[in-house]
Length: 608
Image 1: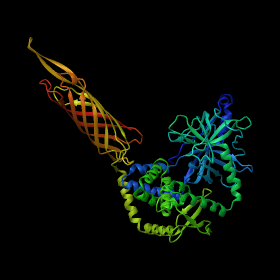
Image 2 (image 1 turned 90 degrees about the vertical axis):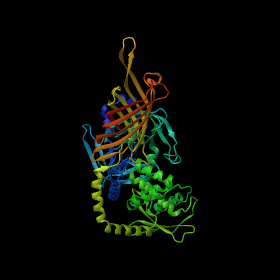
Image 3 (image 1 turned 60 degrees about the vertical axis):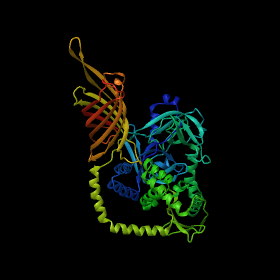
Image 4 (image 1 turned 30 degrees about the horizontal axis):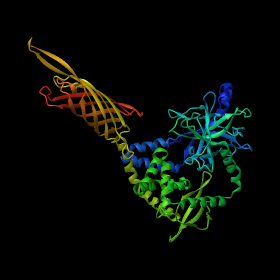
């Protein structure tokens, strides 16, 4: 997944050195690697969208979806209820798009014990927590980690436990640090009215999400007790990580496992739809407030079309949010934001606050609920359908009639689309062999200039280019940077006394800006980048020398860069080019003649 990294806070320091290694292995026995298995409908929509991007030439986005489909991972830990039932506590964002979940526990010898088909019993988007349940009757643990009952304090030592990634694979890590703010209130992460956060300096990396934040506790079997759940890392400051406090986690567990059983489905839907209407009634395009009410069933059914619609017709601020979530977090989540924007616009003609009236809630034979919603002035109500997903009631569609019409269109599309799909498959095979894209932004070129001009020596040059992203694409055609080149010029002076001619070598050091236009082509995995570079510089050494004709140097360099895509973030290319330089004196002087140089350039280019 474009998986979020976890944050954790305090761990112990003194006991880190004093307790035997066996204690740490006991903690490790209760912390596992959490992997989600996506809904088949979600996989299908992403594969279709990947193929569409591939056939239209957006290979980088297609590769991003491919990477996402391989799945990510996070951490989680064992909680055993009073009746012996086993659960896993983790972050909601670790399992947000999961149909089922697996968890792996690593033994002292490195062997893995894996449990499959865990269900997301409940996922809370307000506090980013989730509870996973094992298949019925499966309770492999007699005990789990225990929660600390003591209040955490600033300066207290804490440990972070989990499986952050290294080279794309999870690796056990126990980090040590201290609490730097025991009660941080950050509204962008969690509403302070719901919970504060633990800010700490214990080491975390991508993959720690959902793992426990621990502190020393002699009364606990492992020697440690849970004081929080690692959830966020702030990259703008050093060692600034955040965990959800144990009291908030315990309250959530109690709500799901105890209170949840006492609440009827109708009551839960009524409460959920009431808060949805409140969020939907707000003004100023706060469509992001209703994202948490959108089900992934809704995304799978209409997400692709509504994503494209948002990109083509939504305001730029909305498009920026949708694209940012798609690129940086998850393609499915980006589509979910697009669906939320669609629902928002269905009830909002303008940015003003709207009055939304709810009709009578009714249950269907399938166990879903229908709630008619109508805005003031609307001719008819929209029948919203609500389904239970991850233990939470979410919107399956904003209008039952729209869904039925959309489903009919989809059936028609599929009936007529077989031939088109075959054509797309062939186009995909063709596009996989050729692309006009390059994933490289930066070029560092070191060249040897073989002089073809008498009187001017061969030399060397170093050039750096940056090819910026335009519209977040990988079409890096235009770059700008700077260059340095060194060579020498032969000057012949006749001695009037001896009547002999002496040869003098005058160094030329030319520095200046450069621009580059390239056409990046990738044939299968072979890079062929034809380019044209233009440069303007000054001969710094000769600028003050009458004999060396110092002045402005203009250059033009057409050539080609070649290489092979090994799949790494950095790569090396080989280049060959023809270079023409003309040095123009800045001041009139008979000794300062115009210099022209022709050369062949052989270069090695490091791209990243």
